[in-house]
Length: 148
Image 1: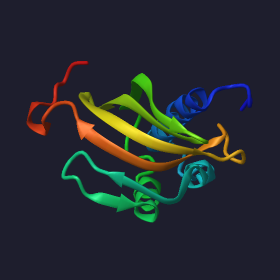
Image 2: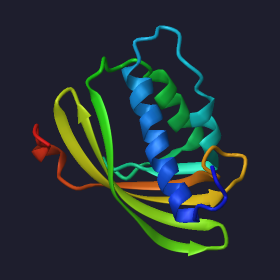
Image 3: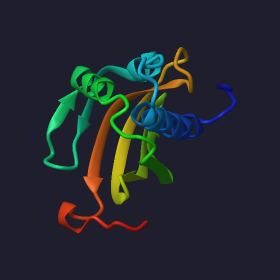
Image 4: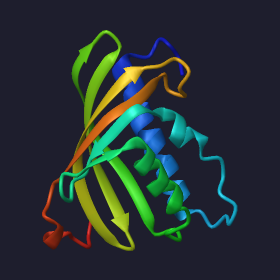
């Protein structure tokens, strides 16, 4: 990734690229999982996610185990779209970015707003690593809509 890109541009590219990896991982028909190292490397040590369902805090190793364990759980009917990516607070190689994540699982769409904290790391594909993620539903689970 070009160092001429701003920290925000690199974080935005990372958000899009990692969610593309998730989509490919979950939809894969390959019985032998492809290289999973990208997911493991970009989630920095100490990474945590606050879930939208119940506000639980899940540590990095549990996130990685969950994603790894769900390889091929969908068969081409899982989609993630990333929208409305905006820069937030930024200082000396650290940035908060917000975005909307739309997911379609077997024809049912849900939307969540996410706030992600990134730090610069030149050894990562986009020059940043994930440090913290907080997701919040944009609709209640009972009103999840079937149409996008």
